[in-house]
Length: 124
Image 1 (spheres, one colour):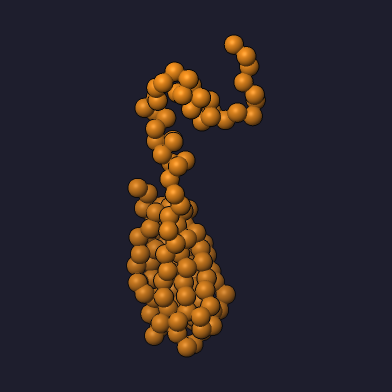
Image 2 (cartoon, rainbow, N blue to C red):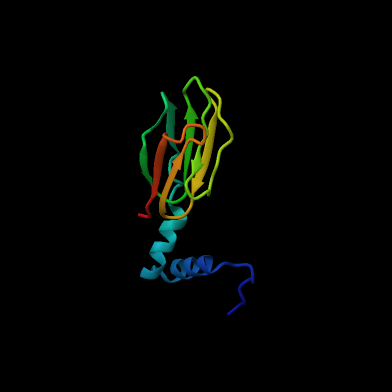
């Protein structure tokens, strides 16, 4: 049997074996599904009238959330745990952050701390 190139990934080797022998090991199915899964659609949170809307959202890991300032005064977005922070956003400016790890991420406007919101990241 010829040697496989060193650069071939384990996933490629399993797929080649499955195609050669006409079977798919059950343990490989979740790996292939994850590799083929499309990226989560972006989510938008609007800032208007001193409110984040919606105030709480639930997303999958890998989702990009974009905040859009539709208010006529500046705002910013600051994570409670300091994992993300926007610059001050004027009207129609945007800030985006991609959430990669499951958890709950509270945030507020650093200029108007009574404005709060939450992103809940859940796998599956």
